[in-house]
Image (tube, rainbow, N blue to C red; front, side):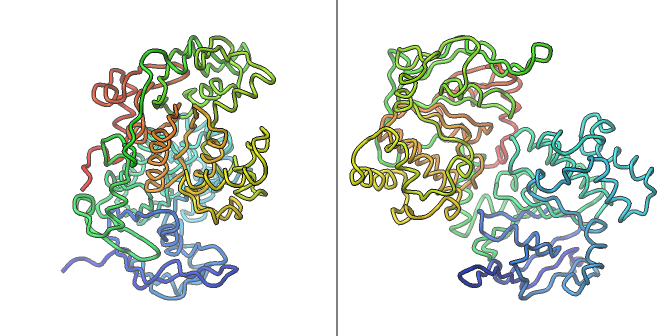
Length: 539
């Protein structure tokens, strides 16, 4: 007879109240977690996976209600607990790692104070002992100079360090179960790996069970004993990681596996059958000696140091590196959003490095940019049709009727339903908003598009859809791309040439095939090894 599970969930149902009625978020979820086991709950945004995580500790938003089911944690009936009793369980016996560290840490309390507060509340230590233990915890989760960091505020730490702090808080009282809700979704691949390694070490040291909520099947493959797949509030598949990934039985799971960058090794090809053509004679874009330094002369920050590269017409050149490597600064200099300190940028043979006024404005018709966060780059007050139409109006292109036709055509180009034209950005999904941003960039029929982390905020399945769209558009319109990313798994799907950048310097560059098959620099090898699910073959 198998031992009783540490956590047992039966028939869990959760409804959300919306202006249009009740929306069922969970439809009878059954879930068990054994002692010392890591279970990954995977699915796209809106699948219900985060609702499961929050329901287990009754931390749902006000509009959500548990309408049925049982949650049993060891000897505790979670559903019957008073709020006071529940607070004693949370933190002491169940730790919780939230998704977004920027909104989960108190901005007016020092890091050490926030950890010590949890220890005092659940561990009964004196303030001096709790403060000392807080520093020990920071050291355990890999925060450098823990005593100094303990005196800092959250905004003074990087995203990766803030996430480690949240992990430290979750493990502060040696809980039996830790629930981690997308703990690495906003992190670079290498930082992600380091954070997950720390979680694993903490789990092994304390024998803790972990419920890992993630949209990334690669992460689940690397870290979980079992995988539970959630779609539309229901569990559609479950099994060991090897079983689910090698032989998925549900169509939804097969789609997730196929879309996971770390589980595939080939470049995406145009669905139309069209072929990309490169101009092998002259580069379409050539960068030489491009440099940029921020800060004072006493404490300079070198964002780009004498960069040299070229991009052939109709191809995709990718720059990959961690946050802070200088890749986005490079993109902005090429787009003439930021002035370079030195060097030249030749666009179709013409030097655009010092363009101003009308000449720079005309460049915008040929060179466009798509940013990382479409929600931040789209005016929330404007309707989608007006957003796409905006560059056409700005350049006086066509009558109102002609522009309306152009907007419909652009929406069709990016596979958006024309009915969405009357909606606003907040009413669209992340993938739809990114398609709007791409449509707006295409409005002026540019020859080149700079894509700065265009899929980093998207689920892997939506990510693949957007990448496939970009490949198709490139084949259809002969576009040239400068593609910025921290994720080599994404780079592998879309790029012809790759430059690996760190601390403002290009460490190596070459064809994508060469970079992936025979990386020469240790840093490139580290990036490759950090691709989640890299050692797993898709089923």
